[in-house]
Image 1 (spheres, one colour):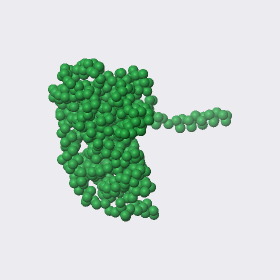
Image 2 (cartoon, chains in turn orange, purple, yellow):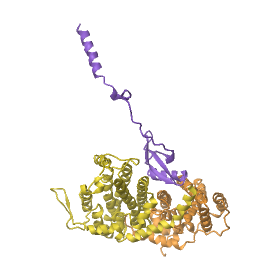
Image 3 (cartoon, chains in turn green, cyan, brown):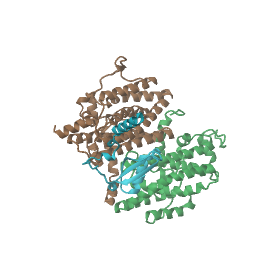
Image 4 (cartoon, chains in turn red, yellow, green):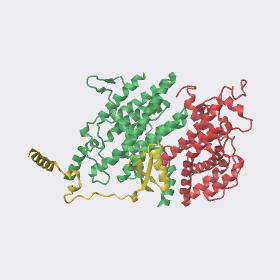
Length: 246
Length: 94
Length: 300
């Protein structure tokens, strides 16, 4: 760390440039990375269903959702990369686990359909609130990307809502959904800033039809053990030939 | 679970063609699935979804009598034209 | 053979087509379901060797392309299972038979994947071998199946390009990356040579007699070698068969006789990864069984 350069414009490595931003008041770049990391890790989790979803038709649909999320991550990384003087791939792959800014909600490995739908719905509802704010940003490029993402997310929200309704329509499904939502609610709160949480809770309750338990939010910055595992596997091929073309 | 038939239009102006079918628990998810299966590459300009039960399949009724008066192949002008031309030839040579 | 069946046979052999509601001989229907079901099962099982690499893809672009490719395979399974279902066999029954070993799936999906090199080689060469069979199926006598093959072939062509791109990037990369490709090719060559089946003459192949298939196995294999050996050699890669050569005079490719006993053992569930894959499929199915129950119960 002796040659750590605190100047984001001249610092050499992506991690160094990133560290140079920490400790300052929250800037667009940090928010960008939160969003990008959320979409990347959630996209990775969602793509784990490819080939094994509940029905073949659902498999294809959910895979598109996962791809869209990776696509969003890529667009956001590209914005951040231009600012930091690096590339989207380097931001996506080459940081240390502690440098990722994703919410704990997306890091959880839950290859179970009720939890997957609960997380999908909770995340999309939170993201809608977040994107509303970003679309009004002073930064025209960021606002533009946020608008594009929001237009695609409209389809994700529709899909999540259809499944919430579908599960709520039967006793068994409703029970499973409730259990999953209650389990994930503390993590879901951690996706948003404190100021947005009351509105978030109102929207979720309206959709699921039951009151949410009081919960201690699991805040960003705390990483689940699953994240390090995921990043290890995610980077194993890339690390086998650092700097190579793939 | 129901079966929905999917019709797709390649580009504006083209006819809608049957492309396949999706199985879904309701019309909402059927729409999602049809979109992903038939236009995730933007290969369809428009899609129609029709519940299979709503489609009536008809067998053509075979013709019992001569209906050639309704078709192009029911007409042969050759002989009449020859007659008309021959009559004109005689009239001109008088 | 009774007169009606004979008439049907002549109809299909002279290029005639059959639709779902048409009368068909029992033998035709049975062979058709078996053939199409094997194809559907293969698409579904084919996802398993590749899906591990979605997580490990080394760039965002590769991750997206590989997910899209695998999504296509699932989409193909959907198209093909719909054809089987309209012939009267529900997909759950097909899945039961797949998991019990009663229904087979193509040999190539019984093998493990070991590296990123496999990802390139599978998308490039296994999908290429599959396209050759699928193009021939465009002429299948059973029209609903022939019609979906158009979409299948169109989507597979992107897979081959993707595979070739992955391979080229590796071949142009570090010596270790190049070695990934060669090593993968060495392992995949024997299953590739077995893929199109033993060289039974068309007239003795019941699937051909009924015009379910419209191409003899050996013709398909020769087409594959014609198209892809030159591409392999052009990259400086070697094919692990010392007997492989092209006879310029006859246009025929000569090669070491594949082990047909091994092929039979593999497709009947004794391949290196068969048991593990079937078990994984069974476990995944169990994991989501409640979803089907909940959804069906409500919709009923």
